[in-house]
Image (tube, rainbow, N blue to C red):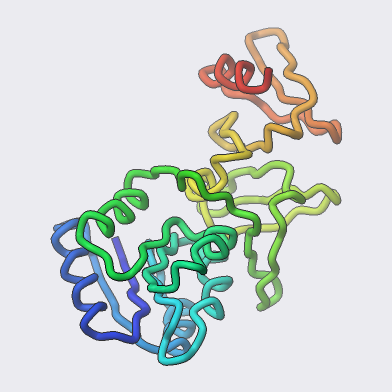
Length: 232
């Protein structure tokens, strides 16, 4: 586990780091603390991480300026902030959790467990997916997303207008964030269930989900019964 803490209060950053060492133990490979927005953006561009803990107020700079960049990356982001009124917006952008200040060990451990145990995000709904394209960040409304295909460490997003975009997060990480409206119907596919028009049974115990746009997505044999029950 490689962790980046973006926090302008050294005391809080040290407390988070100490708790991370206690909770992760030997699984914690590295932990880095940065206290400015500019340095954090530079570090994210040049280093590989598993988890980022982000404060929303960084010496007067707005942590949301880094949020779209962070959520477009391969790692998960957890907000640690006193600005509780920003929680809904943060979840809409695709953070894994929002830990309000002041926090205790149990609450931070819950957030960490969500990251390592692939626990889903709970009651909050993501509304946007941020992608990197030609050096810029583009926000894609979830309502425009039909299905997602795993492509190794990356994913391919298939949109309602027929276009396709690449996302840096893995299928497993997006499954955590999109648990409300999308279903893992196959080891390589997440599908928006409201777009499923028909479930087709083919010879040889092969199953397909036909979408409203005519696209056909394979359904894994072990997932067929659960998918059919949810679709009905």
